[in-house]
Length: 244
Image 1 (cartoon, one colour):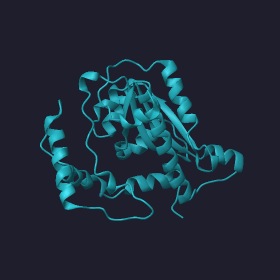
Image 2 (cartoon, rainbow, N blue to C red):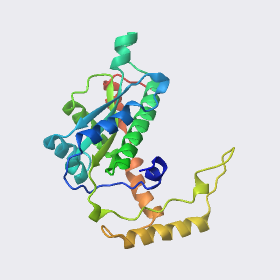
Image 3 (cartoon, rainbow, N blue to C red):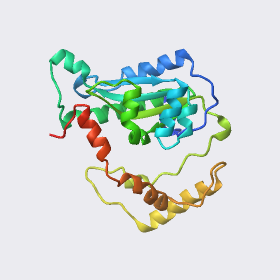
Image 4 (tube, rainbow, N blue to C red):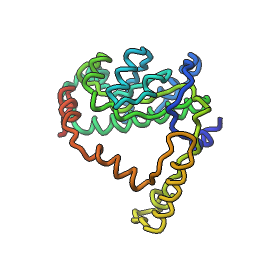
């Protein structure tokens, strides 16, 4: 599929056929991972491919019973990995906040490239961030040494086309794409129209119908996002990172 059409056609896939991704397809995805832009050319993202059913079951449980993790073909874990720089530049922990920011940026880029590459091959997936409540156990499972932290994950597999839905409506483009300078484009009337579009989507999709809109679903999600991240912050320090 054409790159732009692939990007414009994106939708998260959580239902898979159970087929494995073919080795040549996985190799093509790895090519996309390898060529991703990298902060200062550090190339400090390490991608771990998880296929072991027992590991996937446990990661699914630690991620809030996300069953699609257990049933995907490949679960990719994108890690900020300082070990290569430790070897070549003789640097040691603690690693400062600039490395954390660079690692988050690079893991996000690698993850999106991997997903786009997969979608261009007719595969599908969904980005996973909800594993962080179990980040310490997952790190032990994957044998991550000090200096390595998982920042983002991705489920990949062959989509079950029976469960494909329409794309979710997006906010008005003017709200998040601007020329030259920032302007607050919030508009109550546009929000009302958008909420009606999202509610219609939720009520009329084939599966998991519900009566909801963007405002209400966002408020529900914020309950988790606003909770303290003390466990993750402590884990980062244990892995050799700090906030100076």
